[in-house]
Length: 276
Ligand SMILES: C[S@@+](CC[C@H](N)C(=O)[O-])C[C@H]1O[C@@H](n2cnc3c(N)ncnc32)[C@H](O)[C@@H]1O
Image (cartoon, rainbow, N blue to C red; front, side, top):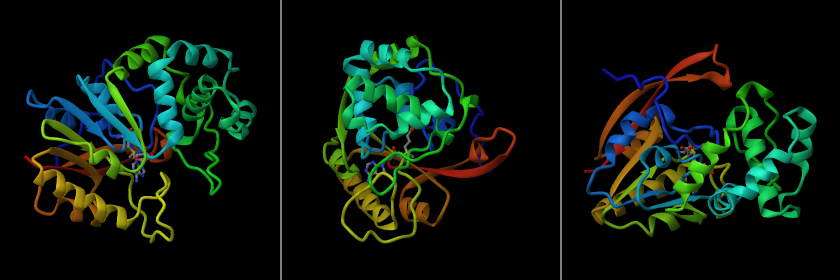
């Protein structure tokens, strides 16, 4: 019997970003893996980092391959006042403003404007998806205002305080995992893999492949061999079977809104894999 994940877990520190593939509904289960023996939290596929914000660990490393995401976290960590000022300068959400910001080259902006741009596009894009074209330009369509406005200033400020304990790393997950040591809890929530071979050995947040699943599997074994606790969450699939081989796991059924519409619901199974 597969237990149901509760519909909406209560959280006193919600993330300030929306994120496709975020595991908010698995939080009640994921939170149980953080115990007194853990000194530091490590998340190499951070996205909106919903488990980090729920756990409030004393120290953490958050990593991600998405450079705009990491730049935004750093700005929220170090200069939250400037980010909030820039967000307030932006007109209310509409298709034109969204298009204008989407077309603007983030490199032409100040660091605070760039973070505000990222937060704005994240809030009003379709389904919290981050996707770029081959030139690295964000190309997710406008979703309209039904996703609500920005979180309140209090949410941003609380997140900023929590981020003071975080070291950020931009890049591939292997770099972050190389930093892990006994006493850490490593949570890995990779993107769903696509069936294609990487032509160039260059990693990209848009494409996680079967080769990446194999790399991840090797790292699970390395972490286990070094006595480091890990938890991996993944949709039930052939790839999940590769990841769970030889490790403990729980299968949890999660209700999801198809394509972001609350009226279209489906139930999917997620596996939570862990060593002990
Ligand atoms: C499913 S999301 C993680 C969601 C996250 N658990 C949350 O709470 O929102 C996967 C993340 O992995 C990142 N990513 C993709 N490929 C990566 C790689 N090779 N190394 C590190 N991060 C990667 C993506 O940019 C994305 O933010």
